Length: 314
Image 1 (cartoon, rainbow, N blue to C red):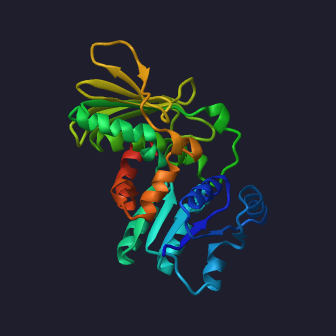
Image 2 (cartoon, helix red, strand yellow):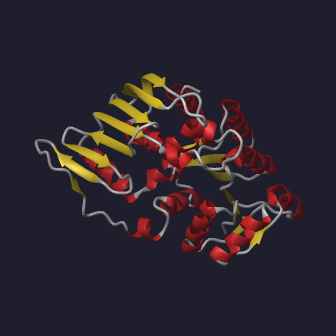
Image 3 (cartoon, rainbow, N blue to C red):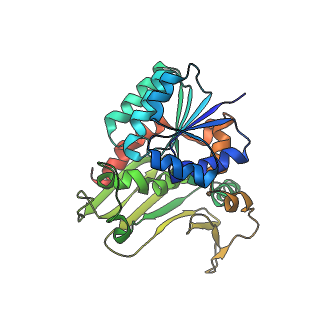
């Protein structure tokens, strides 16, 4: 029987609790801060063990079958490392799993040494809209080109209180939700040319982004974002028959070749995405049933870090 440890008790962990209950999973929630734990218990009705994962591992002689890491971004790497060293074999860690290249190198090394599976939780891969888009892409014979935008709203991000180094790496910590999805659908970059300009007090390396390249599926791609102007997240995938528009990414619009009309696709079942945080139920189910090929594994994430650093001028 699967035994799941959920590390963290904040808002994202509370979303996982809803999903784990929906999946009828046997799980334990391990938190650290007393206030956060109490708020989680009040919101979910689920008991939270206090004092953090390190103390929990001292007190328990057992090991779980699966662990989900949903702590602050600045704590993702060290929490995952603790679990790997303890002997946990299946770990799903919230994106981006770490902030620095050496952290990803260490996680890849440790996961191989411990013969463990570590996956990065990019839940947008599992939106109903995305799964339906994949079917159309396959029917149309594949992607020929794609573009994406990852504009962040500076006026919203600037006042947020985050852990050390998180806002300075905000592209990695947050915007890669969009970029991961674009490259998941269109193929990983085999050629890329990136440009940046500007800076913000909380993101000193860049604020305006532009670039283009070719993916390993031989699809041409381009991207842009301007964190000092207006914009939003979006991904557009083009095939020989259609333009597939994920804007907002939770819904799918389609434009047929030879038409200027862009229409929302109506025959998509959004029931699960409307009942839980979109993508989270299917992602968690895939993780717990060991059908891992659609998840982002830690080695894939390590390989992408150089691309992400280039895009963001880190």
